[in-house]
Length: 154
Image (cartoon, rainbow, N blue to C red; front, side, top):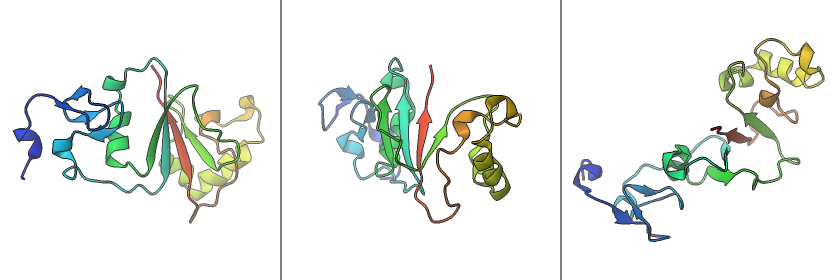
């Protein structure tokens, strides 16, 4: 089938909860039956937990897209019902005007300065570095499975 979405018309029941959906269920994070096996499956190099705001509208959130395309690597939680990350190697990715990018985070020079920044007070942090982008524990640059957390805001 060249483009299965062109032949789909109307809404269809979710295969899990039975609610009427267009292409996928934004509650169960599964495609409708007509698209099962047609959508690509993406394998991510890291595990991602998306933490949504409790008032975020599920049908408007793009978190479901990630959960459907990378179902083995993406989990979605609604704050405050989140896992305990205190014993894991976690990188918190949080939107901010001054947050550093992920590529800056994994850059060796930036990595060392970020790890060293954990010992600084907020006033001593370099411009552009946000506490929420700092690593909770020292991570190896290569060969470690990192669980990232992304928090969306209203």
